[in-house]
Image (cartoon, rainbow, N blue to C red; front, side, top):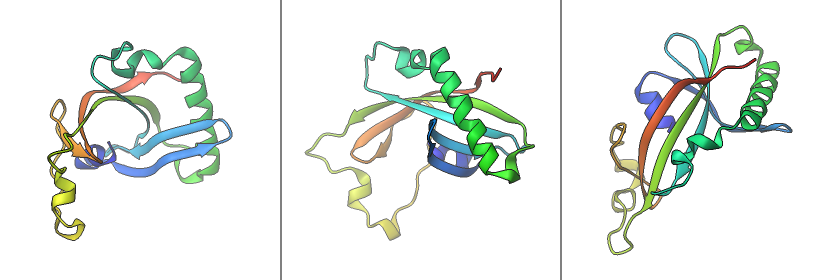
Length: 142
């Protein structure tokens, strides 16, 4: 997900940032300067919760808002930046064991990072990961 954002001009500020209130999957600044707190939901095919979108309940939203407020309190450089909450929903399907995933076939120093496209599978850690939906401004802070 971080790679997808970077390909769109975002600067990734933190990944898996946590405090006593919870964890923020990704924190990134878009090209306009807005800080995006990105909740990433990864599911297998046929999940019952709309690919993780239904897991962003009001309780979860409050927890993300409180955690983001703590991040901003600890990071003065971004305290006055506009902020938003985004949600990324992805589907993960295990790669067949008989065919090694492409990242294992090429030495890391020689690997070329292929662009990630919405709706197209991308190899990642033994899985094919497909970014299904990216919702900017998925919910508002009170």
